[in-house]
Image (cartoon, one colour):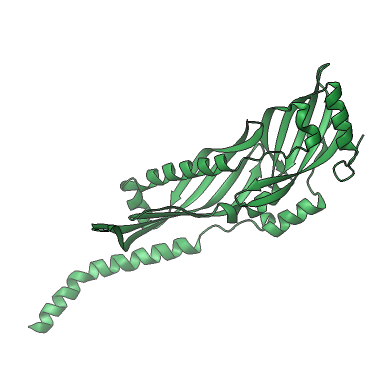
Amino acid sequence: MSNLVIFDKVKRAAPVMILVFVLFTILGACERERPKPSGDLNPQRLLAAVKNGEGIDPSKYKGDIEFLLPSEVPVGNEVFNVAFFIGLSPATETRLRVTAMADLRAIQARFPELASGVYDDSCSREVSVKIHETEAIEDHFELRGSMFVRFFSCSQNASGEERGGLWLTQEIDTKAKVEAFVEAQCVRFSVVELELDPRGFTGFIAKMFGVIEEARTEILEQAENYFDANPICLTVPKELKPVSPKATLVRALEIGEGGIGAEIQGSIDTDATTLVNLLSVMELSDIIEGQQ
């Protein structure tokens, strides 16, 4: 009789065991198929291209006078040396047209590490993002990565909330289209398109329960917060502070094969004081390159 009871329990549990086995098989297959970053855009390759000046197109900053203005740009807790290639030509009797190109590949090389991490950590949920790769494509750039959402049981006690056991982990492949614009004379970025592709059978369940839309809201909010806190601003030498620069157009720019840059158009004042200040800057050999 005992054997019959055990056999009956095993028989009833068999469908559940098979389902669990199938789920783990599906999840394992998804893990193996995770996209790999392109070898051409690895950090070492990007930094080498910056150092060697590869991919710089002089036509993007063409002017009657052309020069290189190095600048220090803070991103998070780090400071990056960013090259601004600048061309000057007459715009009106009182202003010079400025056409500039910023080489952001040094930031691009470190961005996946800087932007990855835990963005939400509450009692019932943990949301983390892993950026795999960034790439410039014509006039915008793409971020590709994964988002991990972990759900926990959460209980209330006298001392507050207490996290319990993990009951669901959902991985979501993400691809975001990002564009650049001018804000307070700085280059700022914003997510304009976002694709989410949840993995495996649990992804289907996550869609049913609205988890994916919650994840979309979370990603957009955190991305905007990150970009708000990290604009790309030119560090202007003190000699150029009074020139009244006005940027009128900023857009993402592809440098070489997938390298991220920014094209900047604007103008500066050309009164006598400004011209003297410009000349004083141009006398600094560590700033000027390729004067015409």
